[in-house]
Length: 129
Image 1: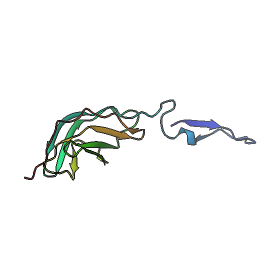
Image 2: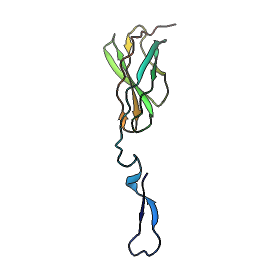
Image 3: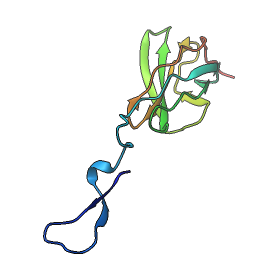
Image 4: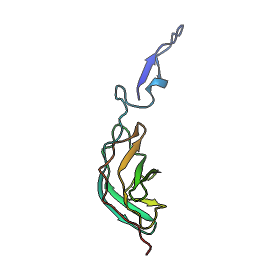
């Protein structure tokens, strides 16, 4: 945050310190950067679900506010995304179809946007327990 001092026109008193609207946000001269890529450690299957464990990425210029898991259903040939406000690993991915094969890359989210995708996980196949 940048503090400015100025003397308003026709003012004979001391300088006043104030915060300008432009000074709120990123430190001066630092453009916002998205997070780097997480490193997938392990994906494991559950009943109609999976858990994806990863090592968090470098945060970029803003803290991580959540993660996005891209869910590739290899069997059905479909893709959807699960966004979570969680800032911790592992991430649970609900609503999967038992017997279908899935892979998952993960990206970190921060105020600058969605970060780089991780490598994909190993294939997991949810099963009823």
